[in-house]
Image 1 (cartoon, helix red, strand yellow):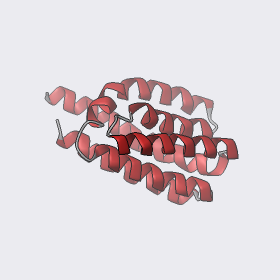
Image 2: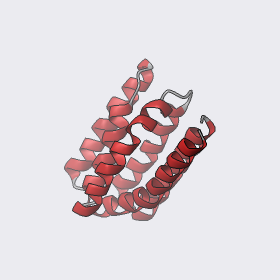
Image 3: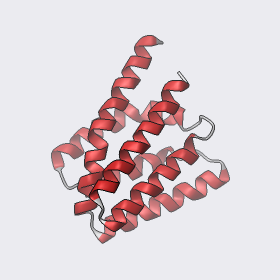
Length: 141
């Protein structure tokens, strides 16, 4: 259990290093089409949360689309690896009470910053989001 906790902590630490930087870049590089795609993903996520369904696919798609919008092919390859490693943890953590709602709120803040093209706020919103999720995940191990 301690080894698993350490591995998950390390993985979430890497997310906290990479994803805020991706959100910053996405705020500066995202196309109107990518912003619209993020809005559509968020709408699907909101609907599933209302119905009490798991939003694993939408959660992954939201973060991946931000990575695409950041417009850096090397970072995108790193995100692919990160997403694969996170799949099991994400699936399990989204079942924790209140986790899906917190994730949705975080995604709303991130998307609002991206729509404004506010790189500082996008980075801060993503850092806050990853930090909140880390607390939830590690408290449940």
